[in-house]
Amino acid sequence: MVKLATARESRMYGPGRGRTRAEYINAGLYLFATVVLGSGFGAQFSLEPRSSLVLMLIALALIIVVNVHDLVAHLAGIDFRLPLMELDTQLAFVEFAVPLVQALGSLLFFLGILILFVEEGKGYVYFRFEKHALNMLIAGPVLWVLGSIHNSCQIYERADGHVQILQQSVQLPFLIGSTLFMVGGILNSQEQTGLSRHGMGLLGSSWVWLGISGSLLFFMGGFTNVIKVFKMQQINVLRLEKLRGGAQERLIQEREGQVPLIPDEERRKIEAEAARTLAAPKPPTPYKDVLLGHT
Image 1 (cartoon, one colour):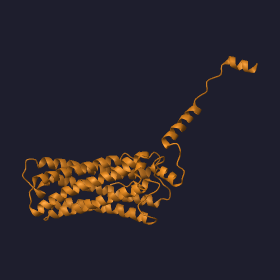
Image 2: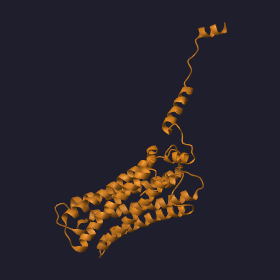
Image 3: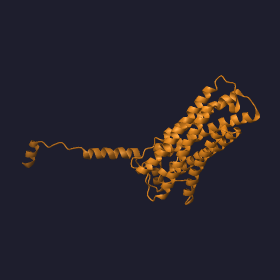
Image 4: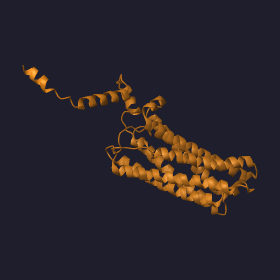
């Protein structure tokens, strides 16, 4: 789950005034999904534990929708021209990779829960499917951790300090929460080794408690993200650093018919070399040459 479009000069969450509303809805929908996910883990201790799987499936479906929406919003900022990602490392490894990896992780987690839900309801015992389900409960959080690490790699050198604190307050809970889900899946898989259980019996107490803790951290990150989005929408000046020299700048130049003949990287190298040449001290003139010049 990422909210990086606010860091860009142009955001593509929707046309005109609907853009702000769409971003609020996107942030609020994710926050609601974390509440449902935590409720699903908590319902494991209720009289109807099977309902917990339904809540988890709903929450994971919402998380998938939010991440896909983020991915589309980021790509819309460059008119879905994927080759432009070669010019912008941040766009390729963060704004494109993070929501894609997070969505795939949520999908794997969703499929793992769905398999257990079907087997619990119909009473089927397919040990091969159950093994795949346990592996999916590990693979999904592993992708979440990977996406959270990528998301933490974005650096803004001249960003407003308050906004940077909000960014870190969003990223760290997601990273720690994803790690708890991953550890819970690994411990649960080890606990079920050698036991003849199926359906919801495959979900151990350690997985449930670590899932509750991870959901709480996801809620904290989602709540902080709502605050960050609100702050970014209320200010009149861009307090996050504009990302220059990348895909968006090249796209703007192409739209205005001002595509440079020299690529940006080569132009920057030429300018840096010229600056070093001008800054280099000139060698002193020998005294003999000075006297000859005067004569």
